[in-house]
Image 1: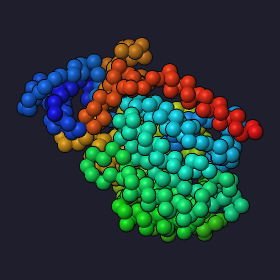
Image 2 (image 1 turned 60 degrees about the vertical axis):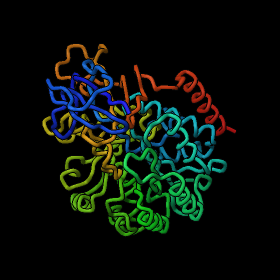
Image 3 (image 1 turned 30 degrees about the vertical axis):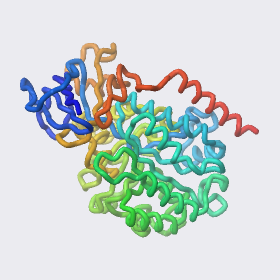
Image 4 (image 1 turned 30 degrees about the horizontal axis):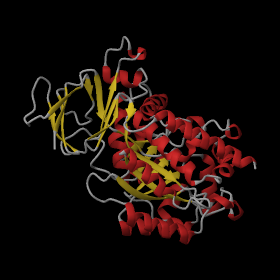
Amino acid sequence: MDTVWIKNPLAIYTANQHDARGGLLVRGNRIIELVAKDTTPTNHVDYVVDASQHVVTPGLINAHHHFYQTLTRAYPDALNKELFHWLKSLYPVWAHLDAEMMSVASELALVELMRSGCTTASDHHYLFPDGLENAIDLQIDAAQQLGVRAIFTRGSMSLGEDQGGLPPRQTIQHEHTIIDDSKRLISEYHQHHYGAMIQIALAPCSPFSVTTELMKETARIAEQEQVMVHTHLCETKDEEQFCIERFGLRPVDYLEDVGWLNKRTWLAHGIHFNQEEITRLGRAKVGVCHCPTSNMMLASGICRNLELEKAGVKVGLGVDGSASNDGSNMIAEVRMAMYLQRLQYGSAAVTHTDALRWATKGSALAMGRHDIGELAVDKQADIAMFKLDDIRFSGSHDPLAALLLCGAQQADRVMIAGQWRVHDGEVQGVDLASLIDRHRRAAKRLAKSVMR
């Protein structure tokens, strides 16, 4: 295995205050040495990558997404609506998803993420209409073809609108089908080892789309198989009211009642917690994925990141679905998180390094990973490198701060598990024009299928 020296970066973010201004060494899929400023490596070097024009960060980690939603960006019937009405507009559209649409949507979302510096992507897929029972298998194939690290959450909906839930009946599955497929996916694909490239988590969509029995059975299987669990929680006040009316419990009380209040759980959004609930979540070591752009687009509210972290909650970052964000740009999401949290806490309380922490180590820990998210010895060699040569950066002085303040949009180079997957801003082996063409045609076909 060659040893690569990523040498003398313009700036580097290590999160642990270690001096790595001389760069870092990678051998195989691991970081083996951090090089201090004005020093040379102690290990033998086979070749050098000049990073003097790059800001170097850990690979960004997206802790919540819905890849299929790239097919319904800026969808006319869903514009200018809040969550429940937005979902009701789109569920009938998504019910027409097929295998070809799922494959190309997953590929496009992953490529878009990788180009923005993302090295680990989590997706929450919960729609399995007839003919799309193998949706997660299709996603895994796309990730493996691209060489990106991924955590796929086997989502589910079992509570139709005729049973008091939100989704229409044609979008839900029987619970035995959900359980059987969850076990199959874990058995066939989940990797427990250090440096795992593919993992499976279990992810009932939300309290308003699955039954209490499914939530409890999911927790039992996750404990038995030692996998993570994931769901949307406390995204809106409507959800809180739904839980009180249906279960007689606030959402966090419901989470505890079904056996989910533990370190295997990470939640998407986590906006509407009171202080007592934040304390309980922290004590249980639950993770929360902040989704700033989606929360603004749907006017859901603002996650209380600093209070959650202070309580012990593991706070990560996600772009959320491309129909409530309309993009899958992870470095842009880091900037958005910094600004939205400053709006809540003040400019002096939230720094650019806070936002980078949420997008790297925070996301990793929220999803139960200790081998990624940091530039440190023995961590996985997942690395993003950004150039500051665009007009937007002209006149900037602090390179690391400029990455967010001046609005970086694209990585120049990305390494995943020691392999260069993005070079000169492009994902290796991908014909981008062809991918966009296939994706656009799939999106048009999905829209037309609703009109029939």
